[in-house]
Image (tube, rainbow, N blue to C red; front, side, top):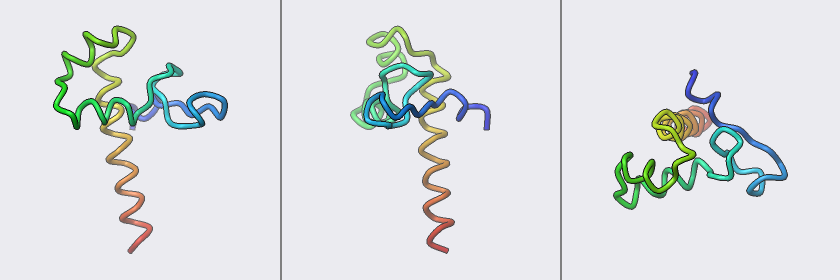
Length: 74
């Protein structure tokens, strides 16, 4: 999944949480903003270092993680 390549994990950055393209913005930040009702345009306006594909990568990361959790339970 190409979107997942936009996600990086560095032990010394943001406590090793998955970040977007090495930025200090985590996948969880993006997901939280979406959950609070921010639109993609709102997020991009507030965080100009992000790209629309970064938001999609965050959603893809969450979906992949959920699939792995469900598969582990089966």
